[in-house]
Image (tube, rainbow, N blue to C red):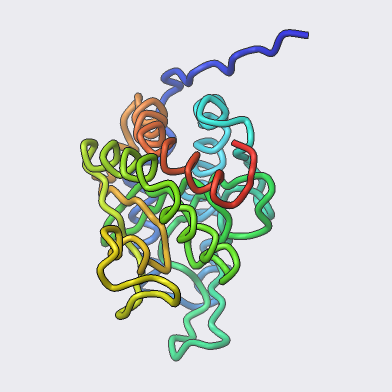
Length: 237
């Protein structure tokens, strides 16, 4: 039976608006459960509903990159990250995030530490990202070993990202990881604890009628990195 090629997204009108960012600004100034409860309807109409609509409209574009990635427009347990902060181990005890996080992660991943594509919206800045954040030690070692044994494909992925304005970001070790020499030609990459490609974008891009196409195109530039990470972790892509 022949498989159908996923359709690329088309312009479907705007999802986010200036009101989305205005709510996040107000939340930053009034970050309490009582205030949030009083403004729940505003959150729903200006932030959560637009975000869920964005996720739904992004589905064809995400599947065009890989059918193994998920775009799930659910209030809880989908691609939209929850607004509540986990403040158990933080000095900052404010209850809510003042940003919107949307992750299109690999279906075999259980949490935010899985390989995925990501959109971050916040008053202080927005960005598109791809890769894997804080992988557990076994996964981290597998990626490093893959880079050591298969450097060319990794370097090609980096070149594609750099040509499109992405940078590699995240935490890194200060010393070479165990088992790797300090003279290794890809030592900077091997020292990474996160393998994240990041590109800052203007919030206004997300308010335009072609925002879905814009984001899908940016995510496409990250497909080589995503494919490489999945190869290293023995995940389908």
